[in-house]
Length: 100
Image 1 (cartoon, helix red, strand yellow):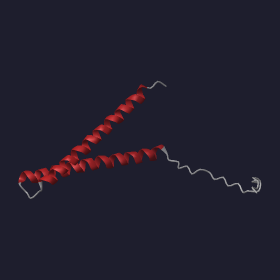
Image 2 (tube, rainbow, N blue to C red):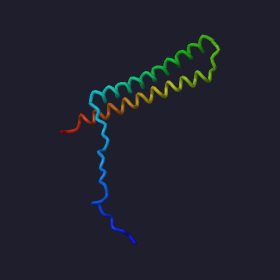
Image 3 (cartoon, rainbow, N blue to C red):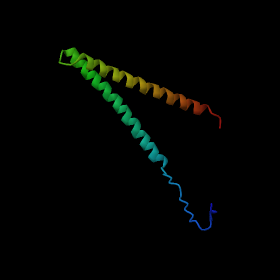
Image 4 (cartoon, rainbow, N blue to C red):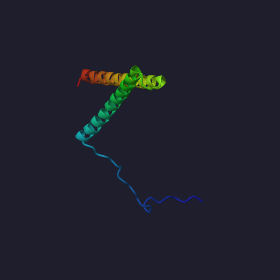
C-alpha cells in the first residue's frame, strides 16, 4: 500500500543557490587579459611564420612544408581575429543604434 507523504515530518532542506558575484572591474580585467592573450598568440604565430620564411629565403635547412604550414596558421589566425573584430564592432554599432 502506498503511504501518504507527510511534508510536516520531512526535513526541509533549502539551500541557497551559489551565486558568484563579480565586480564589473574584475570582469573587465579578466576579459582584457583574455583578449591580450589571444592577440599575443596571433602575434607569435605571425613571428614564427616570418622567422621560418626568412630561414627558407636564406637557404637554411628548413622544410618547405613546415614553412607553408606556419604561414597558413598565421594567415588563418589573423583572418579569424579580423572577423571577430568585425563582429564585435558590428554588435557595438547595433547597440548604439538602439533607442532607450
